[in-house]
Image (cartoon, rainbow, N blue to C red; front, side, top):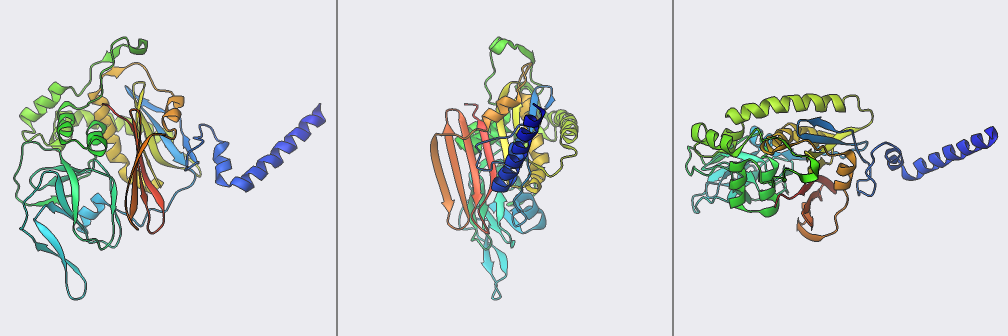
Length: 388
């Protein structure tokens, strides 16, 4: 019996080494706990959940990472002045005799609520994510869709949605740096529904998620939401008369509640992801109560870290606007949520720049942004369970 056991062990060892030689890093990840098989990326792995009150976050880690340093993010570009966003008709791009780009006034067209002009003057392609907020101009706006703006592009008509309903004036037509991504209920209406009225409704109500009946799954509501529609109404009446998203959710009493919640959630997340060896956090899966509802995954740990603080705050706003249920999502629920979808597919692309794909199956929507140059990279993957 002992000799047979030893022989079996040797066979297993050589078999494992052969598998590693054939499959490389994929074999290593497949042997680790909580793998996500069947994904094109193949080497994602879920860590144990991070929970606080009615939110559960599942870190997504990977042992391989793409080089995303070639890409410029929106807040980096606005901060450095390499990217300019303005009201339509306010400015254009011209070039001097030596080819240097310069900004020139263009007042031949009027401003538009749902379109701005973006100019990328940097030497790197610019990455834009749906839900990123730009502040200024005649109204604060959010980016409507994930995309890439190439180097040397002409002034780009940029589709946006308004998140400030009561202002149409400003000292400048230019938009400045903002380190905000709006919370999922608002982001969904821009990225998927593409509905301006629903964007405004989501800003005013905090969440568009349906409230589960008290007896759903045997888990009655544990507590009403911290950010109630009444709290948002009070913030608008006292501190955000123009219904500015930033003033409601960052600069009011509502924002103070979010700050405290984010600090504790960040502390728990840091503790759960401390000490990773050979792996980096590249994304998260987010559940509210027992409802796995959202996922953001990036091509690299660096790109995830750049967006993480903004994303965490956006998840916290959504959490506090939803009723608290005692049910908690399990890791099996998160793993099932990340399965490949099989449904209606829409593809848009700019030749040589990027490819955008949306797959819809039931109430699930998957949006993927893939760069084409300098090499094909799946930069961002957004998966959500739609609220409507």
